[in-house]
Image 1 (cartoon, rainbow, N blue to C red):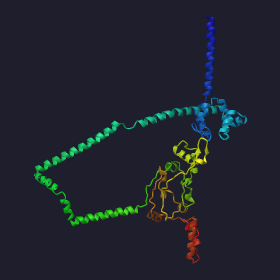
Image 2 (cartoon, helix red, strand yellow; image 1 turned 90 degrees about the vertical axis):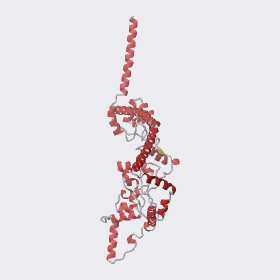
Image 3 (cartoon, rainbow, N blue to C red; image 1 turned 45 degrees about the vertical axis):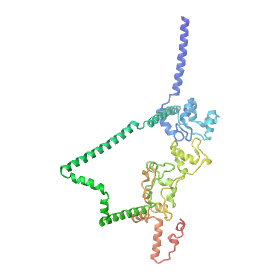
Image 4 (cartoon, rainbow, N blue to C red; image 1 turned 180 degrees about the vertical axis):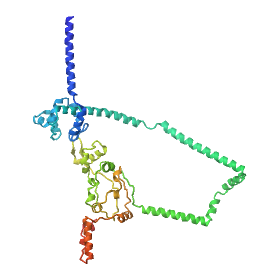
Length: 422
């Protein structure tokens, strides 16, 4: 019995020792404060890292989930350059995998701060992984939960019943009207009408055709209607107000120009300095979308057109192809319009012609762009000549004309390229 008790004591000590080591290991792994780590992560890490996908640096969620050596992670975050200089195998692999671009040294972070960041990353990434299957199940459920056949057939049945009720009510009303007429002694006349009309159903038409006043009235109304239709059709030829083609990329102007308040000329830079406003190149989009909304399918259309791989952040010129935008505002060839004269010289806002672009989900033609519309705008728009070099020059030329001085065509802008070359 004594030997058994000794064995049990030794066994219990071993169990307690293993349990104690496991608890210590667990506490060492999860001792960070995720709430404090969130603030540190957002202030220190979000410029280069995301939790679930590569940005400038690797996706930290899977990286820290697979790497269980928190001491090594702490050294890497605090001073990765020291590990690289010491030829640490893990550090050299990461350094080489990411084009030998060094990570910022965070010597100001204590071991506790790093533990908080690691705890936040692991906790948040687990939540994201758990949310993905739940979202997929909810989407599948939403797709399956369409209107049932019973509801559809029920609605059709209600419509049929309502139609039959209307027919029955009309029949009853007609019967009651005939009974009322018979009581008033008008039943015989109704029967005579019913007999006479089928015998010569075109008698009324023949009588109206012989009525000259009626014929003149019909011809007059027809002429007015046909003339109005012809005038409206000719007037609206090539007028495409409301034209909204489907573009290759769904670019939300209400988000960029509205919510984000991005100036129109950040993308359409030509409006300030040239005749054409210009369609921005996709490289302008990449100024932001190399980092922002990289998961969007619409942004991936830009990546495909540029041959850009977001995983490696490299461009492949063999995969590039032009983006086939569809022009919305299209003036006739004989009409000359210069954006810079209106935007830079006169100081007009883009919304004057293009409408409230900052509220449009997708841009459409807001104004008719007809000659009448342009002339009306020119009649009501005031010119501010103060501080405007163009109008000051014109004012000086007109003063020379009043004083009887020699004025050449060149002084009036006659040698500018746009005078001859559109």
